[in-house]
Image (spheres, rainbow over the protein chains, first blue to last red):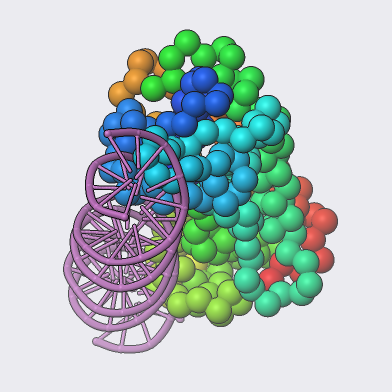
Length: 133
Length: 133
DNA sequence: TATATTACGGATAATACGAGTCTATGATAT
DNA sequence: ATATCATAGACTCGTATTATCCGTAATATA
């Protein structure tokens, strides 16, 4: 069980955008160079963030991406869910009674992790940050 | 990112052994039937638990598996680590400075989950449990 | 208006990993 | 001696991740 590389790219991109002037559009090319990943692949990841309403994009010359206005409230968990999906990490598919106690323990453990990730706002991290990438 | 099915099998097996008479040896055949999984596959999983020191095995006729003496202290996290490994769920492999702040947030979130799983002893769950599988 | 630039979308490929099977080997009761 | 049972290795299969390639749509600028 591992977080995907895509999640890592997404988090780094969000923090980099946070460190840039808010109004400025930044192209995927620049973002990809920093992270040493192909533009086409990163592009797909960014599209997910756009659809999740975290960033906005502009096509055409001098186009690119920038944060949306509600950036202050975006948490780590938001980004992770946008990339990895929101399904539970543990699902007992056995046919033994209605409620699996093991499942309940696992889900509540996962909720502890999510709680921490929900409290970590990207904007707060951006402040303490000297250099992102 | 998902917990593996093997982890689910391992947890259910441990709880089933906990509900059985402690001294009695139980064959993989019986354990596999309950969970509707093949004996050879479950066998591989159980071997990992043996090597992790959680259960002990006896070969030959009337052989099988049973809990070890230290069962009271075994936690969910112990079982999970035995099956999934102990590596961190998030590893930033970018070459940007010595310490990745994102990584630190992710790891501390993971630790919150692990803390909860470490506090959940299998023996405690076995008590509240009417039927395991 | 033409062209360059940039994001978006679909198809495809490569790789890794999870899940599971098959078979051989070794240990141990009866 | 034989049946039973755990262990180990090689192997297959399916699916998700990690990409790549290319065509299309949108937009600024000359």
